[in-house]
Length: 143
Ligand SMILES: [Zn+2]
Ligand SMILES: [Zn+2]
Image (tube, rainbow, N blue to C red; front, side, top):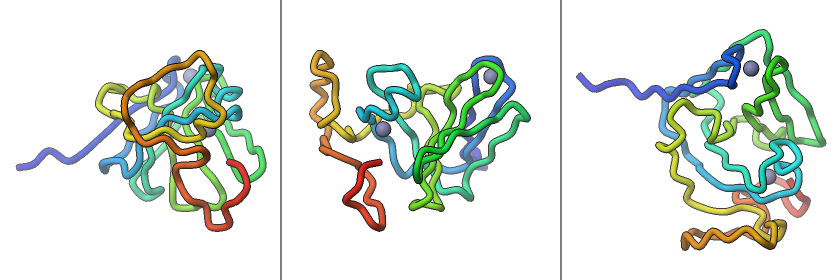
C-alpha cells in the first residue's frame, strides 16, 4: 500500500498548522522587495500547490492584502505562512521555511532577480527570472 502524500507545516508557536496532500507544482526563491518586507529575510522561498490540495487551520491565522497579493501569517507569533494572488485563484504558496521538513523542497528557480540584494550570491545554476516566475493573466505589472 502506498503512503498517501502528506506535507505538513505551521508557525513557530503551533497555533497555525497546514497540510498539503499532493506534491507541489512550483518551488521558487523570490527576491522581490515585497517578500523581503513581509518576511524580513534577504530572500524568500515559496512552495506552490493548487488550492484544493491544501488545508490551513488555526484561529490565530491572519492575513494582509496588498493589491492582488494576500499574505497570511500567525497573529500570535507573527510567522509568515502563505502567499496568494487574486489573479491566480487556484494557487496557494506556502513559505518554504514554514514546512516541518523544509529540506524536502528544493527550489528550481529564482524570481524577481532584478530586485536581488547586491551582496547575495547564489551560484546554483537555476533559471533566473527578472520578474515573476509565474505568469499572471494580465501580466506586465509587478507582483
Ligand atoms: Zn504562531
Ligand atoms: Zn516576492
